[in-house]
Length: 243
Image (tube, rainbow, N blue to C red):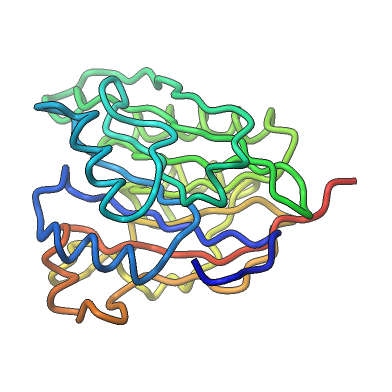
């Protein structure tokens, strides 16, 4: 990994479609982007999910911090530098109302607390909001409780299933902001029409760069669009020093 400011973190969030897309493109893109932390949604859930997730992590040179069997389709992977700084990790289930078959997809909040050298603690979280607004609101309230109780900055990224003006995003707005341009659309990957994927940050985190990824050094735009039905989102941030 290229040397970086020890307080800096590169965080990539990506709904990886249960690895049903062009796997080689996904692996190459992640290697090119070289994130410290990868926040996955729609990680493998069926047929040896833990084995498949660990295999995928090995292909991108990362360790699995959270995910696999029982992971509710969420996972957090980290490079060696970030993985060495884990304080605690966990998965929180989010209750939802069953309104149709789509609402039966398990929802949760995967979270890891890291100690950033030269900075302070930070919580990074992978999230995948529901398709139905009442369930998205329940998820947002759960995430808001996590942010209020974290006692440190929070970075939460994933598939939010709504745009910035949606009810769940509006509820979170006082706590978490999207630093990337709202004009950068993420879904569907082949012809993006909506920005429903984002990496959100709390106040105090210094954002150096934030954008949707449309291509990488070795993965052209047409190939990246085949890796998943969502485009990935990336932030480069610095975590403030502990006081």
